[in-house]
Length: 273
Image (cartoon, rainbow, N blue to C red):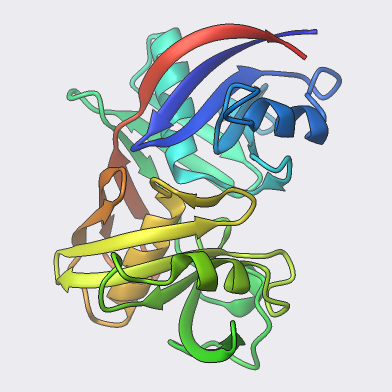
């Protein structure tokens, strides 16, 4: 089977984007092979565009990690899907749907994409996360030590760990230990957040099914939501990731959170699978 795809990235978090029906969708093993950076195309996630499933939406998209597992949402991926489809259709706004919920997108004059990521949900059951009650911090045993994490759902699960300096954060050791922790039955994305000022944070993210990536859109949203809920951040924050900067705006609990950043097309191609 020939698969036509577009290779894209958002701040170095890279994807292949393609259309596929349920019958033509590559298998998990095929996706893992395509994700291999030496023998395949190479990507963090595959984004599959499908016809809309709800009225008043333009499309439905699914997200598969490099290990072939399916996840609910991907912020950088949402911008790439929106940019690609909006340009194909000559549109500036799109109403999109995915397993993580509804997403509204707007293409800005400078080429960046603004995404309404919905309302952050701090309820442990929303992630899901095993906890007796909702709290700002949760003690958790991982990698032989007790850590204090925060937890939030951005349509997908996130644990946020505050660190003094992201450059020296032990992402390689703590990321996998938290990602697969039994208190997160569906695993979790792990953000390492350094608060630089009330208007900037530095962030590294260990993503479930992909490992540490150059950028994680929902991770940036989650970190900002946690920091603002804790009273550490202003309404508009620049999130500096290894791959670049995202602008996150959130008025606070009950309000929709907006993410703005680039979506870049690298090339189009075909591959036999």
